[in-house]
Image (cartoon, rainbow, N blue to C red; front, top):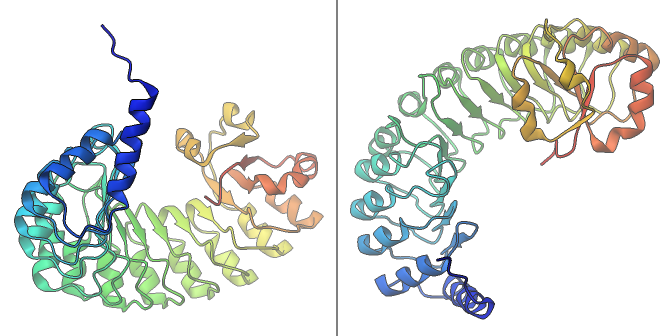
Length: 369
C-alpha cells in the first residue's frame, strides 16, 4: 500500500523546517534535531548557522540527515565526540553528494580533524575559518584513507612545508585541495604541493615564480591558478609541463612569447579571460597537441553542458570563451589545433565564421558557472 502525504501536511512540515532553521537558537535540543531530520528532505540544504553549541547527541541525530548539504557555520568550537558523530553523516546518494560546512571553526584538535576526514568518500569538508594550522590539526587533516574527497581550507593565509606534507594527497584518486586564501607561495612549499595527485586550487595567487611554477606542475591532475593576470615566458614554460587540466581564467592578456611557451602543455587548457589573440599566439596554440582520435559524436554536437565534457575523456580542450574578436589570420592558425575549442553560448555570433574555417568547436551552455 502506497501512502500519499496530504499537501497541507507537507506545507505544515515545511513551515516547521523553515521556522527551526531560521530560529535564533544557539543550541539545539535532541527533540528539535529529530524534528528537523523528520521534516527535511533530501533536496533540502540544512542550514543551522545560528548554532554555537553542538552536543554529541545532537550531532548523532543530524548525521541522519539525508540531504547533500549541512551548514554549521556558527560553531566556533567542536568537541571530539561531536566531530566523531558528524563523521558518520553520509549525505545524499550514499555519500556521492555530502557537503559539510564548518566555516566558523578556527582550531581543531588532532582527533576532531581526523574524525571529520573520515567523512564518506565523495564528500566535501569546508573549514574556511581556519587561518593558521597547528601541528595537531595538520596531522589530523592529513588522514585521507577512504575519507573526504575535497578539503577546503580557503581561509589559510600561510602554509609551512611540514603542514603541506600532511595535506597533500599523493595517491591516485585522492582528494581535491582548496587553498584559495594563499596570496604568496614559497618555492619549497610549492614543491610539496606539487605532489598532490588530484585537484589543487590556488586561485588567490596573483604572482608566481618560475621555481614555484615548476614545483606545482609536477603531479596535480587539475591545477587552478585563476588569480594570475599576467605570466612571464619562463613561468608559462614551467606550467606547460603540467599534464591534465590547467585553469588560467584570470589571464587578461598573454604575450606571444608566453603563448609559445604555454603551447607545450598537453591536456586541457582554460584561458577564459583572454579577450583577443594575436596571430602569433594563435599559431602557437594551433600547434598544441589535442587528440589523435577526434570523436565524431562530439563533433556532431555544437552545444553541451560543462558536466557533459567528462564523457569525452580522450579529447583535449582549449577554452577561449572570453574572446571578443579574432581576425582571419588567427582563425586560420587555430584550425590546426587537434583538440576542441570551447566557447560560451554568448559567442554564438561566431558560429558561421568558425564553420567557414573548419574549426572543431563546442558551445558550453554553463561554462562560467
